[in-house]
Structures are given as structure tokens and as C-alpha cells.
Figure (cartoon, rainbow over the protein chains, first blue to last red):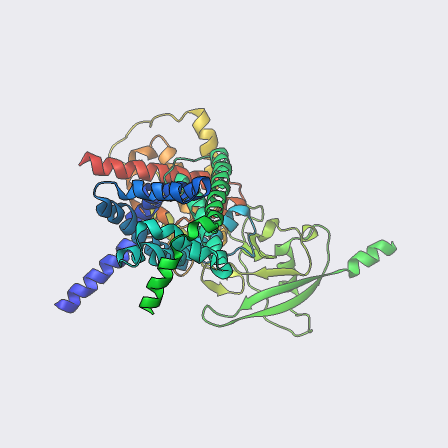
Length: 238
Length: 255
């Protein structure tokens, strides 16, 4: 009986995974809330470029002062991210790219959407581990996140990896909006899809620039302030 | 006169991917056949059939292929020619780079050589009910009229010959997915646009909101670039996306 139930359950999961609603949910969550959160994140980080540590910390404080902040984080970020990421890996696995035979621009974006999705998945896990999880573990406070970032991006290899991460995420975000508009039947005709391509690719460039500038800003000495304290923590931990 | 002799001697080289039975391994065989003005891939295959000798001079079983109309309306002679899926009858040798590489469309089960089994496409049309039910136990009378403007774009969709080129071009039609493919999606748009067909629109949308339905599309848009009939497949897909989205909300909010 248990085996039977397991079979039914597994079949149910597989059917859901292959089904219309699972894919629709994946697509919806990519925009609401994830794309919105992504824009918010780009803006908060850009504060570091615009006004240094005080501006950045003000942004971080503003978010952390929201009521029910943990609930908001779980419902609007972690759960959607987990679903979108895991289901996205399944979509990437199902693809059989044929860009060698069909070197069209849209087909290239089809491939890039999947490649940047996988890169972003790995990058986000790493990034969340280094920042939010360290805060949760009590190793750092929210106020010290600027200096945590400073320590990361002043190392050339990690800085390069971060650049790859933010540019991949930005492409996945912008091109994802393009395909969301098609998949929900909002941009139907070729002209609408062309115009939305221009808009989304412009968005990709703009958001990439914002993130790259923030990363460069985190390299400034002014973000170094608390790094001595971090070193102490690190030496205690090791 | 000398020129004629030269052109008669001119040879066209073919590299053909062959397969003896559905389960056996594929292999490549090369052929050289005399050039004739205006020849296409089908007439070349006919030449091989007349004189089944490969480039090594070995006598072999002639290459099998499928074709009917020879004017790009039946969809039977789809094959991969120089890397692109297309109709062999419309593939003029003068327009092709040589050697000409001919392969079966391996997205479909290969029956033999270049012959493939496109059953899944016809099953897909059955699944989405790509027809207009007009039969009754009594005379139902004339149906509603179709506006001329609508008829004009719907006619373009009706040119689909179920040739399978769009499925071959699609990176999401493969053994890891059940995706129905672009052709059937466009047919749903066609039959849902018809004033009588519209009466069963929901049934067709329901069929596309199940496993392997419209959610399988990954927006690579190779289909619209490959369709030999120039059917606006991606417009059809986006339109069906719109119809299924509306249908979904109607179902949820209407209960």
C-alpha cells in the first residue's frame, strides 16, 4: 500500500513538473516577486556607489526596518527563489540546444537564458551564504555587510566571479522579462516582440552597469572600516 | 559545344546519412552523380535510385526517401540538407553548397535512410482536435460568417503541411520532453479563429494545458525562421499563450 502511494505520489510530482501550471508558476515567480526584488537589490547596492557606506547602510537599514521582515524575506524571496531555481534547472536539463545549426539571435538568447540561469543559481547560493547566512549565524551584522563585500571584491579572482555572477543574473532577469511577456501572451506580434527585445536588452545593460558600479564602489577603502573586526571573527572561527 | 561537354561531365557530390532499419546504427555514404540544369535533391535521389552505385563504385541498395507533390505543399520530403531541415523538392542543387549533405530529421523515428515517421504530428492534431465539428443528427444550417480580414491571416495558418521542419528546428522537441511542437499550436489558433471552430475553443485550449502542451515552448523562435510556408508560428504561439492564460483565469475565477 505504501509502495502504491509512493508510485502515485511520484507520478503526481512528475506530472506537476511536466505540467502547464508548474511552468506558469515558474514564469510568474520570475517576475513577481523575483524581478522586483532584483531591481530593489540593484538600487540598494547602487547606494554604495552613489553615497558610500552611509548611503548603503541606510538602504540596508530601511529594508531591515520593515515590519515582519523575516516573513517578507521567506515569502517574497527564499521560497520563490528556491522554486524558480530548482524548476529552472529542470528546464535547462530538458533543453537540447542547436545553436550550431541555427545561429539566430533569439536562439542564442534561448541558450544564454539557460546558461545564465544555471550560473545565477550557483552564484546566488554562494552569495547568500557569504552574506545573509553569515548574518543569520551571528558572524556579522547587517551594518558590516559593506565591509564583507569589500573583503570579497578586493580579491581579483572573487571580483571576477562576482562580475560574472551579476552580469549573468542581469541578463537572466532582463531576457526573462522578455520571455515572460511572450509566455503570458502580452507581446503577441513580431513588432511587439522586437520592441520588447530592445527595451529588455537596454534594461540588461543598465542593470549590469548598476551592479558593476556597486561592486567597484565596494572596492573603495571607505568600506574597509570594520574589516579588522571581521579578521578577528575569522581567526576565532578557524 | 565544348561547354556542353564540360557541364555534362560535371559531377555533384552527395554525403548521405543512411540507416538500414529503425534500430540499426546510421552510417554515411557518398555519391557522385552527373550535374543536370535545374536538378534538386529529389531528382538527385531518383538518379541514385536509377544507378545505385556509391562513390567507391560499389553497387548498393538505393537510398530510400519519401516524396509526393514535388511542389512544396505536401510536406512529405522533409530532410536535413546542409544542416537545415527543409523540403528536398524545393532544394535546388544550384543554390546549395557542395558537397550536399543530406540527413534524415532525427527528431522523428527513422524508418529507413531518409524516411521518417511523422505519426506524432498527426497524433498531436487529434489531441488538440484540429478540426471543426459540423455533423449533427439534423441539418444544422449555415454557420456564422467569417470576416474577410480574419480569413486572410487565417489562410496563412492553413498552409501548414505537417512537414515537421519546425519540430526538427525546435530545441525543446527532444527525447527529454513531451512538447507537442509549434505546428499543432498554430493549428489550434487556426481552428479557434474559425467562427464555427470557436465554439469548441476551450476543448483545444484544455488539451494544450496538459503535459507536453504549450508550456513546452522555450521561445527560441527557430520554428518561425525555418517554416517552409512562412507561417507566423511564434505569433500563433504567443496568441495561444494569451488564450490559455485567459482560459486559466476564467476557470479559476468562474468556479
